[in-house]
Length: 458
Image (cartoon, rainbow, N blue to C red; front, side, top):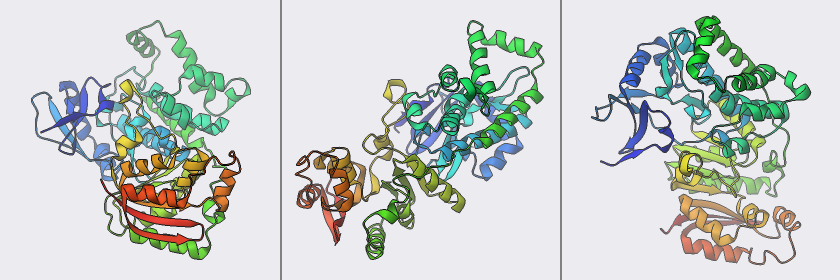
């Protein structure tokens, strides 16, 4: 029986997440086991699990090295905050606060406030860090406040107040944005924007003032000042109202109307949809839709697949897609923000704490790569052999579209490149490479674009 520890769970000395035969288990020490028993005795826990807002969890068979072992439901696809859109991060933050407020009402709190405590079932966030709950203690503020600010509140502020995409920042720093960094960004007149004075400037000042004091001394000071349960609830309630006020409306972008402005006619577009639908008709597992744009083909894939991960580089397009999926109650399509030429790497401790996109994807049942190859090959100078190898590593079945050099969209990309630089970007060259790695099951040419469905040879 192979046991594999979850690399991201090492930070909690009271427990550890690990995998055995496909099951997600959590080992708890004696104190954490007591916290679990207190949690399951509450009313809110069962209510939130029943509503799908907290991951399903049950006690599992005992192991000698732990006081108690829990079994969690398996999330269809693990994603990280630097792959979420603004509305996704805000909804995750609001769920975290909703759960915290309910816990406080029954005498519990959460010792963490990290965005990594949440995952997704399609367009629905779910809280997964069961080991985070513990009894609330008199005179103590919310222990997860700093993590919440750094991984959720500050990124939301950066986008809402400054129009700055937060994803690159969170990807570069696994612990999020420091108060001092945020303070420099939101100085001058910006300090009067919603929440900035209290949660950025005051937070940084208090943190600097208490840098030389122990946590125990700070807690004693708060108790003497009369910090109690009601003030803690009021503080969390105020943060919740602030997060609800923060907003960012996706601006119009080059890709937001791509389905309408690309060179396909209505007839070609219908034929392309039929090709994709037929190619995926026997797929019943995970589908990766790379370059998903507005999710048109992700929705077709979801007719057959158990789960679809829709990857798109334009954060505004992903945000719009997420809002539509959320309105539809879609729980089988997960939209993610990611540059396919620079996908999420492994980050954190030893580069393993948060796995790379390719590690998490494994080899999917199918991959859609529609109108992607020319952007990678011409727009980002990725050689065709590299692209084909990449597709073969990602999926057993691949549906790919090759856009010829004389297509208007390809010509637009080539116009910014030196003459003759992409002489090997030809359909015959692509077909030769593709046939070396895939058995071509179907091929259909429409104008200057050709669709292929291939089954990996190995």
